[in-house]
Image 1 (cartoon, helix red, strand yellow):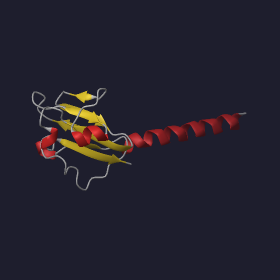
Image 2: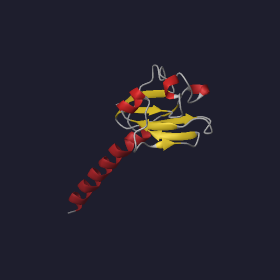
Image 3: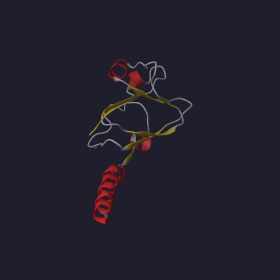
Length: 122
């Protein structure tokens, strides 16, 4: 019986290690570098590789910008879906999910001026 309990403990420990290893490996990226979340963002992030669970730190002036999580249509057409998550603090942390992550600023004219980013997380 003691051996069975030890085996169960090892399995539980292994599961915990797998779950927490994603959190340990997660990185935080400041969007846009020193300029922060601003215009002409479509070339960011050059040379960066993202993983699901990584965090984006979006810094901006909340009196003139915001960050909106959008779908492909919203990204391409610079429109905000009805159920979109809108961040407004000026120092937002957004955890990336696996796949394509799309963000825009929906203040009039900002997305059209390049205030949007597309990030693929593996």
